[in-house]
Length: 391
Image (tube, rainbow, N blue to C red):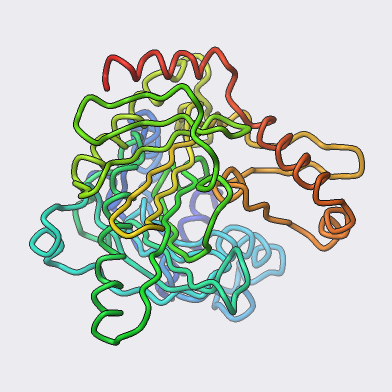
């Protein structure tokens, strides 16, 4: 028996137990970023008469699944464990997303979104409440919004692009509008949520997760505005360079805020940075998919009544890690909360080191870490030069 036949038998077996679902290559169920990858898979499938499968959200336990007698071996079970247990279903493939390491209960996005809020999303989203992956779980309320193209639905927008910074603005404002209405009815204080997105992580390739939470006074949002302002020509709209160790920009609008105009400007800033990405720096990540080196972190806050602030932090995928310091380990994959000044500690060992630093040394470590992941000055000058005529 040929290896491809063994694979086909195992896939069919897992399909029968509800762990896999067949996907069509020429439908909206599977979105390929590179036609060469799609054509290569199609050619192999035709050559070996094989089908394409995607992972479902059924719980997987490699010890209890049933396998045909010839394949019921510890070695094969270990292979399946590696291949499936740690690979969750992905909306990129048209199967509902499970957020790794988070207890998520999803609720469908309201069907009359455009009628209720006067605008439609560029992508379809689904909300889910989770424990807090950052902050004190007893104190931080946290939930996520994921792309929601369930099997058979048309995905509105899954292309590599500016990652819908404007969507994060619209979603954050709409979420807070609903919460404010609820709080008024319940006669309880209203505290706005903030929204963030990493963008440089895996979700920037296949789908993206917006995270919403309540943590007041993130350091970046309290920073001073630098002297060099990028002023938008539309009334009340500004793009401000912040005084921060890594380049960061605040996009604001004087009240009353027009959410549509603010989100359009946010997208324009993100698109400008993306378009400056150098083709020679594209990163191949597998399946012949190539992604741009230019990416970003985004933050949206509504700390003051009637005020919306959208923060854009240009990033490079090749500069995600902070270099080690004497006594302090390397900080890998500096994310959106960390560029906002909210340092996340990855292990008890790291915490022991950080905990013994003086406040001044901690601040110095955070500043140097942000400087490590900052794009080079030439790129930032290019970004600001490209923004001015567009604004």
